[in-house]
Amino acid sequence: MQSLEVISVNLWHIVASLLNLLLLYLMIKKFFYRPVKNMLEQRQNSLNSRYQKAEEALKQAQGDQRLYREKLSLAEKEADAIIQNAVRNASYREKEILENAKCEADGIVRQAEENAALELKKAEKQIRDEIVSVSAALSEKILEREVSPSDQTNLIDSLIREMEEPHEAHRS
Image (cartoon, rainbow, N blue to C red; front, top):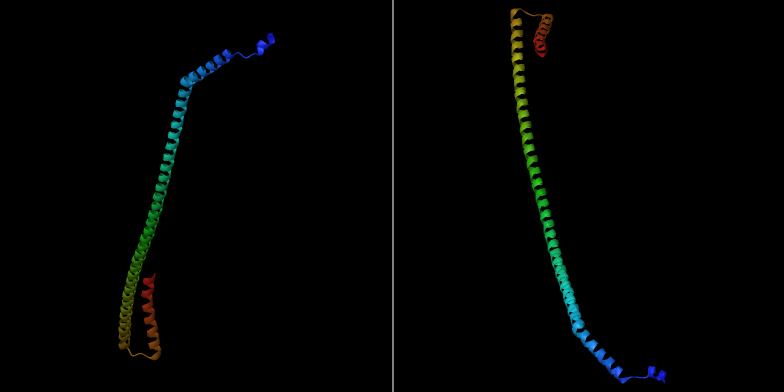
């Protein structure tokens, strides 16, 4: 019969075990469940707060990115406008410089033409003076004596030689 006592069910043991289990459940619930639940709620709130901050930071970053793109676009447009303005100014300056150079060149050509005309007048005057002096010398020689055709040729040749000698001296 002893073997039956080992297998037998003792009602008081079951009730005591159930009371122990109930007491243990209440103690765990009071001392561990609520603090752990509060800790998990705080952890969840902390995570939710971090997610919310991350979303706000993402929205802010997206807004900043949009603002950056707008500013970049405006800067590119402004740079294009500055370049176009510089090209226009350079073109205007180029035309102005070319016009000034043309005016200066025209002035130089006009001055050169005037100088050439003056030199031509001087040369014509010198030639006239020489013709007059040659004519005067020839007339003087002719009046000095009567000239035969051979004397006349010799006389003209000598006058031409006399005229060439001073010019050759001036050229040297």
